[in-house]
Image (cartoon, rainbow, N blue to C red):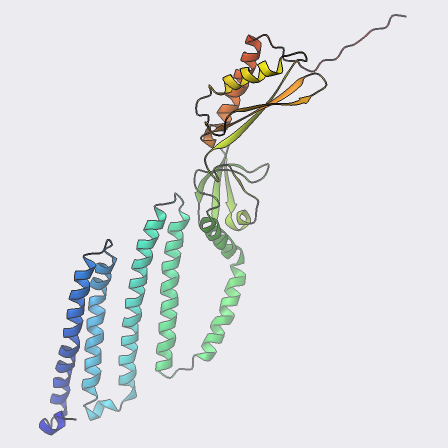
Length: 345
């Protein structure tokens, strides 16, 4: 090297090289940081500022280690020791993985908070935590495998052992993993959310109280709590009254006596149903004459409520209004009856 012509002391050369390398690398990095910092002030998010702040110290250490490694190469008593080169490689790799992990974690945090504000479920928060932890574990394993290879340790048998252990753990946690992935599929598919009224089967009907990572809590109409595993729930047929929109249809059947004026009945019932509070304007109320039964003329009235939560109260009000209106207009409401004829011998 050129320095050997002017400086015979290898330790002094090492020190000079360390200083030169640090200055040469540090100055451009400092300039780039200033440019990035100026650019980040124009963005709407502060994630870039946080990444720059957290990565500043690791980047400085990486630069210092690179310079120190080049300086040590000038010292003959040390440069031929393989453990020294492996040590520097190990520390640099760990620092690089650290920078990648904190950058990805910050990105997940920002993305997760933005996503979580759109839902009322706790599962998205649990997913974010699970994703961050998994990222740390995977990153740590990759860094460890690379470090082991740097130190000359054969990692192929280790990978085979990890694979066998992973299969054993997967079988042991099969039910738990099924529930976790079932919960993930529920939130990603947007099948249900907290506050929705759902019908799953004859026994399971109610309001979604919470969607966890392992199970979903449903409060029944009898104010009882049902805890259902997400793995089972994801495979079941779910009738969600809240989807695809809050509007919900109500169907009421009633009958009048034979001889009643059909058009008059339709107009009376139409006018009464339109008075229900919260009824939707579109589609309009529809009253249909559906059947001439054994003892009555049967009708059905169809109308929509703006909110599905008002559906059950609307059924009660509609039945009350229909009964009172028919009585008011002297329209007979037939009921099943049996005539008994006695024959006198």
